[in-house]
Image 1 (spheres, rainbow, N blue to C red):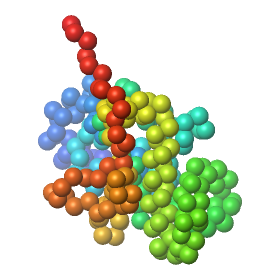
Image 2 (image 1 turned 180 degrees about the vertical axis):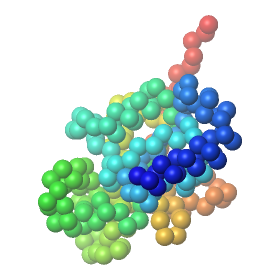
Image 3 (image 1 turned 90 degrees about the horizontal axis):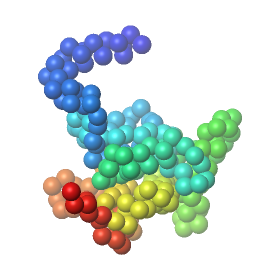
Image 4 (image 1 turned 120 degrees about the horizontal axis):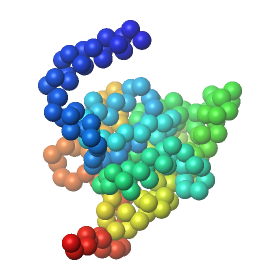
Length: 227
């Protein structure tokens, strides 16, 4: 706790004064463009990774960067996503997994959470990744199996994300884009799921478009009514 209080004191003395106007505006509300759903792992720090300013990212973290499918589980993450889409009007939602993920290790080795019933129950929402890998890559084990599980979990959570009515409606009208990323902690690298290619590809800043997992819009964007 002493370390945290000292850190806050440094923030208040060194950071806040230089951005006083930013915080003054934020005190009255927020309008982030992107929601970032990622793991609760302490090594994953979205604001640091993307050099964002306060108010730019709407971040939600949980074990395994999981989004339960609609109607299966009422949860904080589902409520947060609905709020982000309906109230904050975010234009992008990113689901981001990461290397060396303890949740994905629990998918590989369920015995790791056998004495943690709440964690084991929560990880059922990631069973889709385990099943896909078992059925399509039965020989994948060890680090390569963990990498594949991590990627397939992101893809599976993207599918769950699309079952949320607010998300489905915003995707259909072209008001929302969704993205699936995996962050490599040791090498500071990002890979994104490219729905067109059906695989993860490296994100190279400044080199072309960032791959998306967004389905094609089917309706025109609603227009504002005339005054």
